[in-house]
Length: 400
Image 1 (cartoon, rainbow, N blue to C red):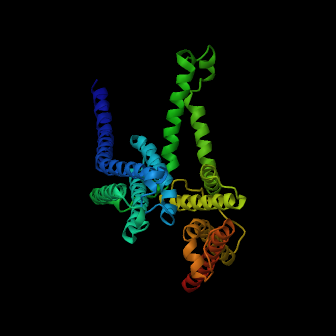
Image 2 (cartoon, helix red, strand yellow):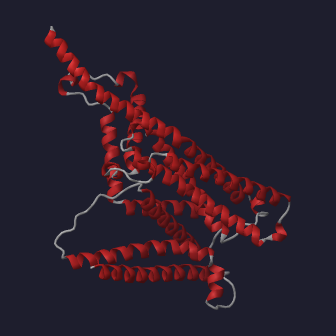
Image 3 (cartoon, one colour):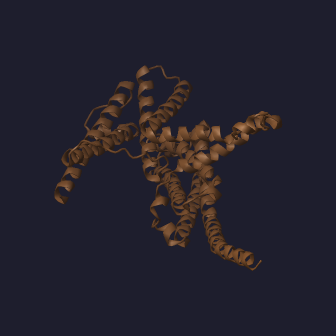
């Protein structure tokens, strides 16, 4: 009896530190959640208000006709942020659903805060462009009482953006140093957004699967218990994991495919709505949308680490060849993104580009519009490719 009591006491003593560690972990996680939640909610509210404002001022023809930002280059910015902001907020909401499952909370908290910063930055860029149109007095002869209300709404949206940014900044300062400054363990920094999105989708898929099968479908048949009955969540989880690994291994192709699909849908809606008859005009707008979405998707993924490609080990290369190949690949990647982003940039600035090169007339035909768009994007891509290659090779030569 004495030995048994002593064994129980020793076992209890060993469990106390583990329980204490778990309680401290839970307390830190809950405290972090309470600190971050207001900032994320403020970001979501600002994003929803911005989306409603952007939809009203771009899709309602009577309202758009009185706004200072009714034409390019102003509409070129909002045509992307109108979709990108709610998509980003939706991904943040999905990841927040997995909050209590999070391991390596420091990396995930920082990634959510980074996403909130990116979201507010996109809203801020669009608002800044709208204020520039107001300051420049664009389409002043079309202004009326509706314009006054639009400018007032823009001012309120600017206030909400400022409040959200200040709250987000204060939240970053109040978090623990390891979570706010990025000094986390290596294991924390390895995760990407797909880790948590996979867990959320697996849970939702399992719930949906059980609901469709009904109560009877959840009971194993006779003989299945002997062979080991597999729960419904395992097939769902396995499929989701395979899909996530595919996205990680082909992240560039996936972003390109999504850009193609999104651009096709938007181009069809705009072309049918405005009655386009020129095939060249259709092709140009489709290329503009595809390039813009691809570039923004690659940039957001690079900044936020939504899907991190798995490392590929290169072999059978000398050190010099590896450095040269790496420099070429980096320059080529920069050039592709620059060329893609140059398509919408050249399109919205077509009048300024046309005048800058000293050409007479205006960009008033599909042929001129296509020429300015593709030539400008190509020039931007080639210029940045050469510049990046020269800078990268020069830095590596000086360093060793």
